[in-house]
Image (cartoon, rainbow, N blue to C red; front, side, top):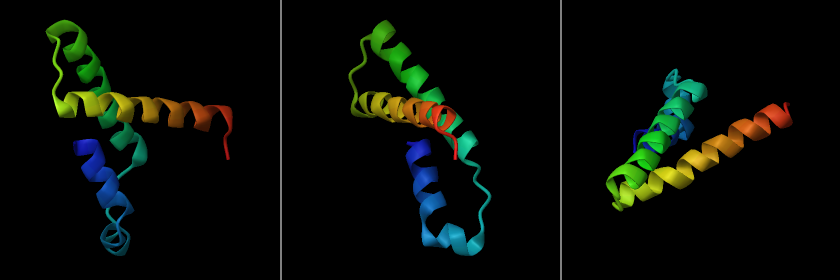
Length: 74
């Protein structure tokens, strides 16, 4: 949830006008923490809540984004 909220805030017009310093790697790190804790809770505790299941595709999106940045730098 924190990853989604910070990315929405970072990409909003309000953040651009105020110039809030939200570094993308830090926000991506928070998303990866959510991904790892979601995978652990699914396999260890058999948790099937909505936010835990939502953290998995978000974490995979971050992994693919980082891999694409490494493979095709711009």
